[in-house]
Image 1 (cartoon, rainbow, N blue to C red):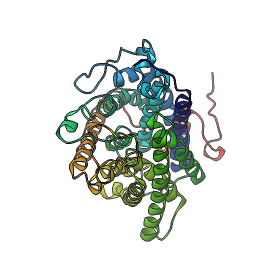
Image 2: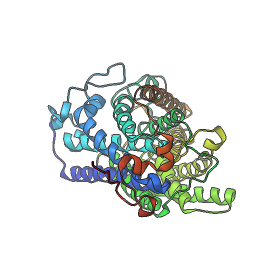
Image 3: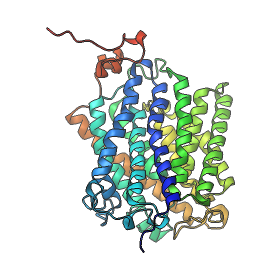
Image 4: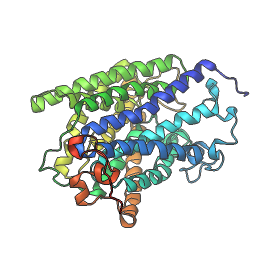
Length: 435
């Protein structure tokens, strides 16, 4: 079929890509406000570093290895087919059917890769060497994110062409429940275990230093997430509208559910809880945004708000230091959204529905889609955790991944970046005497 440009859909997707790109600086504010004042710049630099590095990797070979021809062991496409985004025609665009050119499609997918890597940084706040983080980010994007994206969206093992689809039904992941959130959450757990606990974890208060930053970050994330979810339709149509509505209502309900859980458990409904509930709802509705109706979105938001609020305390019970609750929010929220598709999926309200996918249990489809979603979620957890653990272990044994105790205690901003966010924490830029 000859490609025909649709200027409306193209403009919509350029806007959606820009919104998703905004999510990474938004995440920098969200995470930056949650850490202590002596490490806020380092925390934000992890997001900005991922933005630059992963963006380059995606343009060079990431897109090609994810969506290129071939299916090497079910984990990679051909990384050289579109190397540097060269050699492709608009007929080969992921969004060709909706009239969106190749470069716009490739750019949109780049923003997903960037934010996924940046999400992991919240699990290692205050104690990972910035140089090690940058090395890890590039290797992880290559050997974990790209294979996961290929498996789910590029024709690999977890797609409609894979073994799970053949045995059960086509798994549904509309905008990245497995590729982004389960992937990042499992990776964050592996890396947190390898790094070990922050000095004073569980004994000293490690409160957010700037809650307005956290609230600002959450607001910008919610705004950018409409590009994430509505944009995943690849067209400005009713299904994009369905994704927008579901994203709004699930997120609002999750925030309310988190606050109610906090109030019942601790006696206070906090601003940090509101911001965290927002992100939990956004995470959970992501894979289901166009696959469920309004009632399904409401339930998904409510369940995610409660379970994620409870899950953030697991690190104290099990003794792992997931600094900013990547596991409790992104892994648990991603699992909630991915699995509950098996209960609430319906093709009644969307023109979009994957071939081979079935309605959920509550919509007359039986248990098959629930089993398919559960198996995919578990495979994603195991693959991401093990692959990340191997990469992290090699990095730990070779270049070292943890900052020294002096750097951690004194403040990683000043020691590593030569500057501090606030005058009271170090007097600004370090001046080195030249003799």
